[in-house]
Image (cartoon, rainbow, N blue to C red; front, side, top):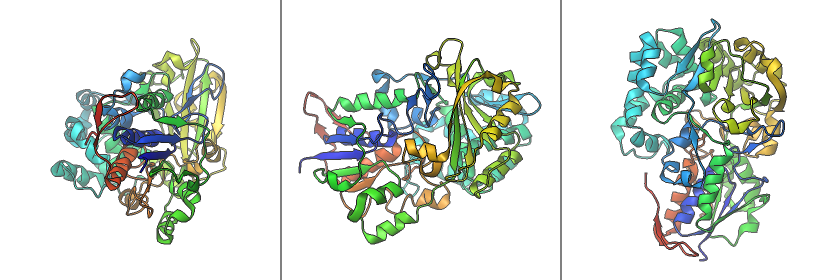
Amino acid sequence: MSRKACVVGSGPNGLAAAIVLAQAGLEVDVLEAEPAAGGAARTMELTLPGFLHDFGSAVHPMAAGSPFFSSLPLEDYGLEWIHSPAPLAHPLDDGTAVLLERDLGDAKTSLGADGNAWGKLMQPFVERWSEFAPEVLRPVRSIPKHPWLMVRFGMNARLSARTIVRRFQNERTRALFAGLAAHSVLSLDEPVSGAFGMLMAVAAHAVGWPIPRGGSQSLTNALCRYLSTFESKVETSSRVESLASLSHYDLILCDVTPRQLLRIAGQRLSYSYKRQLERFRYGPGVFKVDYALGGPIPWKASECLRAATVHLGGSFEEIARSEQAARNGRHAPSPFVLLAQPSLFDSSRAPATKHTAWAYCHVPNGSKVDMLKELEDQVERFAPGFRECILARRVFSPTELESMDANLVGGDIGGGAMDLRQIIFRPTWRCYATSARDLYICSSSTPPGGGVHGMCGYHAAKMALARFQAPVNVPVQKGNNRSLHLTKH
């Protein structure tokens, strides 16, 4: 055995997997098809020179709260988190906005009559985030180390968002929770849609919704720099067309979705396993627009300038109709829009006095419908004059997103539908393992699913190492004189 491993794909999960393998003493090569590492966690000049846009993920509660990423000294390798004063703003038609405050006590106060209900729902998990995060960011079928905590979460998590909001008296609070739950890309009437709303809110209170200074590329670069300390490397513009070319590696972990794995794995997979992968379902896609702006977005509710993330969709019922349409293969005439405005808090994103913004709405997977007018109408609804601020825009259909990152199948940014069945069996009952003993899948198509947290890669690499029987404590050679240990969560 040469103790060599290869990771195909350099998204956050691929890099997390590579780091775990390198920590265990394996020599690791990461092969990335695109010219830059990061997958959806990349930052580029997509509109005009000097305007830095996040290609995919922009705001990172799960990265800041990731049990694995938090165990790494990424700040020593250039990562700096920036927190906007409030994690989230949700403007309404009356010219005001409801804000999700980072401090749970402040949130309870700002939500008025619903403050106690909000606190009762969120507080047990906010206070025990360090125990809760490792539990919720792992396969559902794992035996929990904190069973009573997870039973308490599960009692609510199995519910739909519509069921959970019955606890709130105020339509403002219900609208706020609807936007949080819509990150699931499920209908808000579906089971477990409420779990996503809870998780997004709990993370906001526990660790915030920060942005990396300089863009999401800063997180990717920090991971790559840390990986390089083990003399492992990331090779960009190295597309893998077939795993047959990687036969000299002892382990291969693929940060790809089932569709790509089927294409590149060829005859290495059993017939039954391939049939299981073929049944994997992808979720709705997104229609995304990046903006170079001449100034800040002119929100009617000035409170929106306190938050890096803004949810645009009005009431709970409006958002529910929008998400149900996308889930059922239709286009909503008034889509729910998720918008990020990072340059308000990070001046490195745009030239002086100028700004960047990023917005998307959910559409049917692979949609070819131009949703630009509908998306911008929603922004104008809460920020009249927005279009006059636009210096340039870059529009991405689902197909164009997939052309820049093959994991975004049909524009699906979550690695596959996150309904109850595919949360439990993701992408199959084997989770990270495949029918080939030396081949594993470590993308967001595995537990715990979408989001920038690296935990799919972490758990996949742990499983691969256990089966490979690699020692957990191995002196690192080639210039590193210290012994490194896998951190157990």
